[in-house]
Image (cartoon, rainbow, N blue to C red; front, side, top):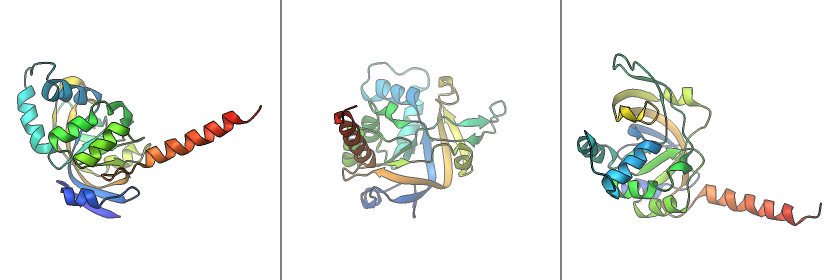
Length: 208
């Protein structure tokens, strides 16, 4: 298993290949549907004007994302009434929902890794090649276990999105993942999709 700490250099990303097991440590940022849509519309495509604290949050995110990781996660958090936040469940969200946005967000903010489950598509794979970056597959169904790797919650942005959709700033220690999309065009998800399609096609050709 490779041990990697954020921020991550381009050289380290280029060394990673599909199938590598990695233990991640350092800062990462959670972001799901609402956050990705907000980032794209407000700062990348600029189809809506910044509102409220948008620009302040944007400046912070530029620093936090640079060389770091986005985690597709809607955590379960205690301490909402006191501000003493603790994450008690931190399982990965299905990533394909962010396919329309992810490559653009990676490029704009220099994000080096994306964590989720289920993989992503061709646009994100191309983004991984160009940024460069990688897609890390996290363990589904292990939300409590993964939460134990969170050593500190440093803060939260956009709580008005709701707790699962807010942007949580977390520090982790030895968060376990597997590289399933790399910066060289490799995608284990594409391999599985192609193999599954071939099996299905062969089954459909058989007489019933």
